[in-house]
Image (cartoon, rainbow, N blue to C red; front, side):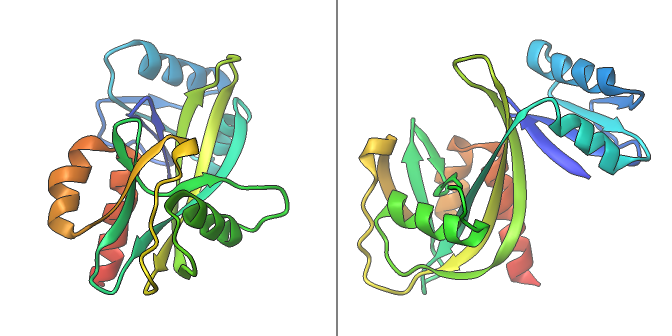
Length: 203
């Protein structure tokens, strides 16, 4: 199963039909074009495309876009607070595009350190990959695949926003602050990864 966000709307690609607002059985590549058109140009907020060959559907879907790989992290301090950045008026997790020759892990650590000013972040484990679609100024349709890692930080707090990247604030948030302040002003894929991190931490 693959969950993709299209302008904060949800597209679910799955083997079986899921109970969402709209469901379409996969027939061919045109099915995916129709699904994207419905999410981009109508009031439909969540849509499921289903078919037995999920790997084939996903490969077909990816072929419609230019793929950008990115990596980032859910960084936690010894108090259990999580590090967030604020950019364009929204709370976000530190992340960025992978550079040529970098591993996902190397990229996640580099981007976190560049965007937040922290040093010596410790990688713990991979959490998951989120997907979202956007259109670049030149009209290219991009599928951004962001690989998320759990990170620990216990050093001196040298956090400072990378203003040249449009980041205006770096802040540690506890669980209550995340629910009250971050969730109302963030992206759905960020909520998804934070909740997934919380779920795994409980187990």
